[in-house]
Amino acid sequence: MQAHNLKVAIVSYWHPGTGRSGGAVTDAMAYRGGDGLPRLPGRHLKGLLREALERAEDWSWPGFEGLAARLFGDRTEADDRGTQFPRPGCLRVGDATLGAEVAAWLAHVDQTARRSSLFRTVHATAIDHFTGTAAEKSLRGIEVVVPLDLMAPISVIERVDPPPRDWAERLAEVLPLIVAVGAHRSRGLGRATLSWEVAQ
Image (cartoon, rainbow, N blue to C red):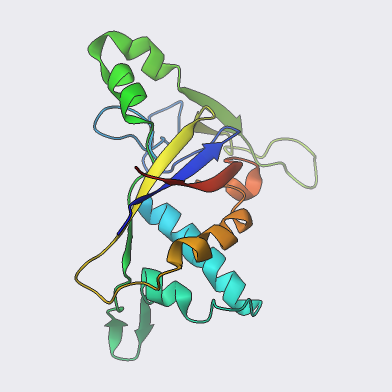
């Protein structure tokens, strides 16, 4: 079966969250690979794709009934007896990374300054509704990444039931529903356009 790459063209600052702090200045660090370069986790993209498919199903788009669960598995749900292990899906979504040539060049030991230039720190604070001033102890520093084009491989998991033959076309239909990626995307970060690139 032909391999596919999902192109993620990010056009604004974005934050691939880690849940880790960077000390006194940065409260939320950006996710990096072992090469020190930013990447968008595959599990995050998988969640966005699943949500887009579920919206299409909720809106009764023809051909989308049950497709989210078939491609990406059942959601984990807890009942009275504890957590039920979900049925796996038939697609695997890898991390979205820079192209191989660019990544290899930036990962070189001589490119430390250029790697650092991919990251910025922005600050945000909560506003007190009564006084209109910054709330005490609410200033947060967030490490963001500059706009980049990333590629994420999506492959079929051979050991489970195969996906429908038109799975790539179905995903292409819902890609416009995804308008932002990463953490804080509801607050203006991570504006992006997703599209397919077929690997040769």
